[in-house]
Image (cartoon, rainbow, N blue to C red; front, side, top):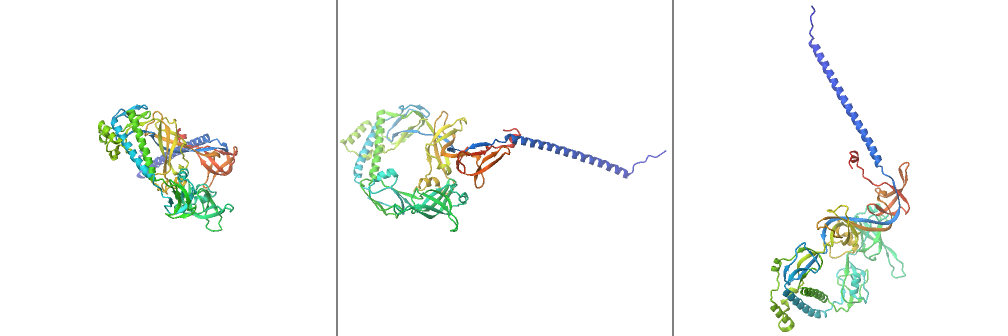
Length: 598
């Protein structure tokens, strides 16, 4: 009988090792198969994505458009936002001293023209009439005395400077010249003239771009000959860059030999005499820091100064005749006119017997209350006392004007405020880069945020505020004022007010978006904005296109001007009738297209 042999320990270890190797190999195979499957899946996804990208690109490949260069009027917009406010509110007032018995209307109530708004104590109306009449008599006496006053026959310079403008000649009436010119002349305070050149005006754009504040430049202008037969001669003086803005570059230079409004040319100052001159631009010069010479009465008998002459404070400028007029006299006349208006208003109140609405509209607010009446210093005299007072005024007793001056002082008591509900306004902030393009009377599109987004209202610019209260008392010329604003650095905010006809549903405080239409240039060459391409140093267009190869050609460099959202002005490089080729700019979003978004 044979014996069963048991495996040895070595054999057992060998069998276990073989099993482990087989399991390891099986695991590796499985992992490799999984990795290969993932790679295959990724490859399929990438291929699908690539195909979709190509399909989407081909489907969005834009049509090449052709545009014939033409002439047209190019307009652009200045945009801003603000809130609606009420305009043309009418304050209904009565002179202080007239007692209001009762206000008969409430806020938000609709009223008609001529409707009674409040009742009055008529005895206080009579008392106020007597007081105003007394003041008129007192003023008449003061006016009679003031007529004998005279102004100083010599007009003198108030500051050191240089005479740059004189609008008067001997024999001129001072008041007439003031009404026509606004002043008798102008003194330059700081010895400098200014000129603003466009930041893209000169032929050498690189030189313009490299300018910095304080850089030296040359300014050239024509100096008239000493007499009519003499020829003009070109004068070149040193200048410097004072300010650089997006809207232009301000250059200052000495104020001698050149007059305001003359065209001057600005040149880059060469480092060496043999270097060629580089023109930066040109413009009309203005007085950098002007001070107006003003007067109000008299006739010019003799003028002691001439244009471009330097003067010192206290120097005589001219001698006047017919100076029997005074500032005090003029002030008294204006005060008398005001009192006449007060008396007319009191007579109307006495005739109407109450406060009547001057217009048709809605009561915006009731401004008078019984508390105001209790605090007011109103007349409490009886009618018999009033009769006695009137008799005294008529000369039947003693009379002291100072006893009545309170009720005719021009102060008013507001009764109600009425909204005619015809218009509303919105004030938008404008930066200095656009302020020069805004003018009163320009039309605007107004969109109210609370209204249908498609609804557009037409408004009109009624006010453009180019300066704020923080500026210096010495005013600059209009161009310099608009250029500099209130500060010498940073972008200054200005404002424009747009008035729009009130529509149903408009309420104060609603947000509004405003686009002001700016008429920029007429009869200019224009092309679509998308047709103009830009490099770091120039702009260009394509004037040919090959459909077979889908290639553009005929590149032409151009100089551009004004532009809006659709068109751009071509100043140089193209002529009317030429054709440019382009595609419209369109943003394409891969993810939204691939995943089905819009």
